[in-house]
Image: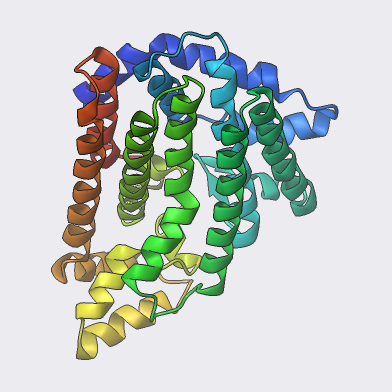
Length: 326
């Protein structure tokens, strides 16, 4: 896994440096407070995967312009906005190993800063002069909002189905990955079949990425996670490992799992018992299997492209999505 990560980073080092510069140059708020709050989430160690996907997708489609890094910032601004909003809604206390923004500034300021980042993303989308790019960004913001509302409405619901879960992660995560890849094709004036293939790659990668994140919530190391152990479960978010385990649990074991889920103040010992049950009931393995299936679909979608170094980086990113530790 380490060698895979190192290979990816070596291949995209210059792109990541340029993306980092573009994020700073294009933020441009008029109020210093907004810069401080936005910077707290933007420059706290994110992977820059979403803007990187835009740049790589554009390159795979033969992009020849100079503005791809600027357009790529759209997806990091949108992602950062959702993190700011999510932490306020969920009451999360840690993000990327540091205090969540709303624990430093007041929630209203944090929410409005998130709104600013969404607006900045739309403004940059308008600079492309491409109605199809603006349509993609508008769809993403609409879908992500609905996903958050759906998740909030079903918070703590023990009868949450796998179908509902997939719908939520499609809206909250996959559409942003899909859009990042799709816009890379659009700014390159790529043919429709290439745009569709990259959209499929991004969509399936996003689903797998979220499933991998959900598996990481059942790690015991908050330093690796960058948030509290079992944070999603404490916030009432039932993810696929739990959904699958509950479906297959019976009697006392099901009652024990339910009791832990319904108590947001569960102890470390209780959490470890829960993880053991999820593993024994196949929830961990099933989630990993579903994620692997999505990644195979993502990689298959790239088959229409020639075997060039950029394609290999995208294939490596798909492999890394499940192998990563944070």
